[in-house]
Length: 145
Image 1 (spheres, rainbow, N blue to C red):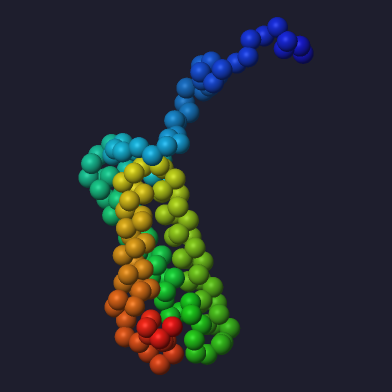
Image 2 (cartoon, helix red, strand yellow):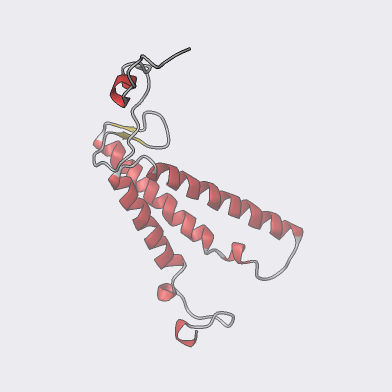
């Protein structure tokens, strides 16, 4: 088929030929409560559901940090197969939750991005930093590094 005589198609002319049931996905950050995050129709257009969504994303990020810094994943102590299976299950859960946070951020909603970063920061401060830890025998204090 010869397309030599046809004018080049522009992106705006291609939009006219798309299915009207397709959902427009943002590819840049935007602000507002009218968004879809993780599931179709959630949180919808309700401000209360949007706030709930932000709380869920924040808590997911905190839980990811908690799991990442839990003693189960460090592998100290016995080396049984059962402990290895538990470590694998916890690691898998942590990775799955981290991907859920990533997918939520991929909604490009500015509020979701901010609460995800805040959740990771709070989670690290509580569970990963030395701010709330007592140095144990097997961990050197930060000043001695």
